[in-house]
Image 1 (cartoon, helix red, strand yellow):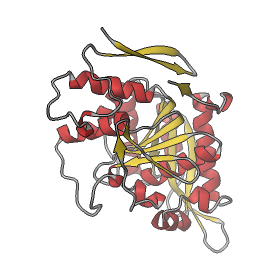
Image 2 (cartoon, one colour; image 1 turned 90 degrees about the vertical axis):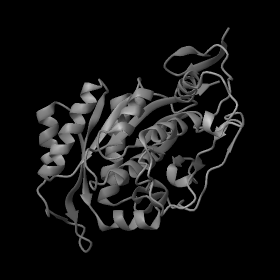
Image 3 (tube, one colour; image 1 turned 30 degrees about the vertical axis):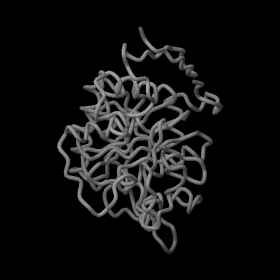
Image 4 (cartoon, helix red, strand yellow; image 1 turned 180 degrees about the vertical axis):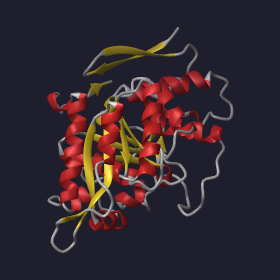
Length: 319
């Protein structure tokens, strides 16, 4: 016997069946009142729950880099809000467990998420964008996260399966640096991942790590939406002209070499960092700046790559 729920997706119609003797609850085991006494197949329930949540989201995008300090999280936040500005329903998931900075960049570091029988509700920003992060769940954001892989694995289940993301056009996931266990776990949970955006800076060291990230994604047979070159030139705060502090074009060359798209160059702009400190995404605070125009262009290319620009922005699914 199975419990079945019809999930009607814009791209397909399928039936997701809970395993025999499954509880059928729409929340993770860790937050369940019956966690201490449950004898059912937890692994099967977790997989079913993630499939159920993700089936209601049209496009799942990972944003990553194999190196820290290249502006990955900044790019992720502004990409998510740029997609929202284009009219899409967007969720922003922070999977960077050891540096969950998304809440700070969104100005919601003092918010704490709450759950009920249906799961944990992401925080909803004024424009409707949904945000979930470990930083919105822990009591003290200044305490380091010292977790073994088994605990990290459980949190990834919470992030993807226990959050009530609902119907979305895009779920944008900020990855931790590197190609370690967190990335492997997320890609295992998302076999139908729609694409990966790789962020790099123009320097050779960063580009070396970007190559490794691209190689890993290719090995997993996941689509690569493209490479973004961050800190590509400096916007003068006085005249708004561009100053070439570092060399430019390195990411474009790597993209050409590896046969993947180059989807944008984000200039160095002091306002981007200032906005992150203030908790206001730059694409909202400075809609006409060169950096915002660059982020919007990246968002448009992501949507075009996935075919979202040709689809309706109406409801994604019905349950």
